[in-house]
View 1 (spheres, helix red, strand yellow):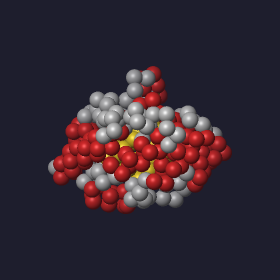
View 2: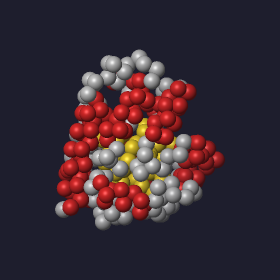
View 3: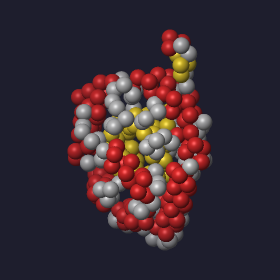
View 4: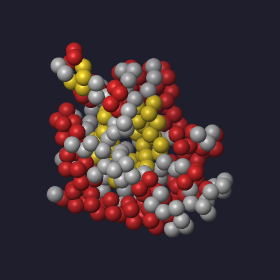
Length: 271
């Protein structure tokens, strides 16, 4: 999916919502637990319920890889079920030496035809470059995450870089490897004020923002500091939507939660 197509969907729906399909088998509604088709039945119901209110789906591959071959098959079936109007993300956080990254890119852009994949930039440009070589595909680089451990490395001050924090250097360097048409960044939502500063570094790039909803991030603050002329945001919500109810009404609850996000996003887009 191209940037133009993504922006068009955002404008059409008045939404920059990304629904995270982090489907934990232990959290399935009781009537689906233990069923061989439990996860795929759940995923399809969630997609049917939320597709009118979101523009993207993010599949966290860990929840599927942990199930072995069956999980990979479920991931492929889930991806195939998502409408082609929606931007699809493999949240795989890959990144290795060039020839290995090339195989990861093939996995998530060809074998499983996602629109985007999340990548860790720690090993440098040659570990990211193979992903960027694909036409009309997106590489989503970890920029500044909101987990407690982010302070271990991401916020370290670099004395040789005029006091910049490590994450700043990552953003400034990595944005030169691609363009706003094929490169996004993950920026956590639980410190939304950081977004204003980050927008000064990468004003035109799309940001994938986790942490809204169950993790406590504020959609109002993320929108205030993160929106740009093309929206420039994909705000991800996973548990707050897909596990809004653990009963047989889980799909209806997910639809209501997604619609509530869409309604607020429409408001912010018009401001």
